[in-house]
Image 1 (spheres, rainbow, N blue to C red):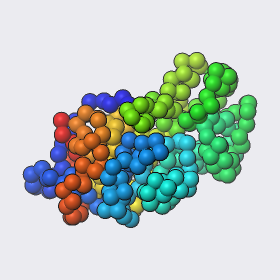
Image 2: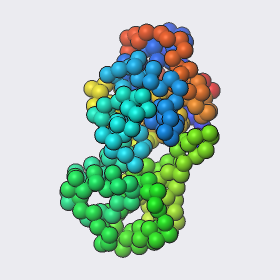
Image 3: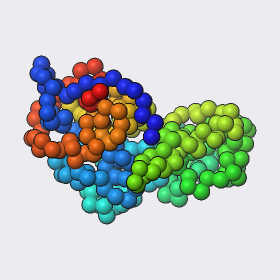
Length: 282
């Protein structure tokens, strides 16, 4: 992961000193997925307990562009994490939805998973192999030289480039990294010279806004929990949301979400983060 330097601040009660439980005053949580709740096909220590503590008061906001919310909900259940599909906001799905709203029945080349292609088709988009109006680039594990050539030439012909997320990698098992959509985007821009029309995923605001909407949550009483300053903390700051970082990021409060639950404190009244700050130590 590429972690950027960022300004940080400890959580506080209004008018009070820094607190010991970084989530004690959070009413709602917006949770990152990869590196925060799961790592590949394993739940991270403390993830199930965190979801139980905030049952009914959390949403996942993820740059995942492989799954649909329904499919991911089933996958997480197999890992012992109960998350309703309506509380999952994913970059791939939201990119297809954005395109369907702005350009109904558009001719689209989708470079991504079979699940994302089915979702795009169900929204009324026309999936084509050539002469596209828009290229939707997501995490495509079958990406190849031939696919790179196809994308580049469609863009040079005049198609617009819509990108699910710009993450270069996401965390894998045993410290390994998994190449992400941003790695493919780097190849596409190098080959075509064309920049994206729009990038949907974090740190852009759309996923955070959708998460707040599905919770009916107030930004002042909502905390983002993630592992990446460049996406989670930076995106939260843009909307005035507090953010707690975990993992090996600079300023992370704990190695995993289990460390955030160590104090086991109850959830108190909402708080307003000062200056759109990240709740982490520097």
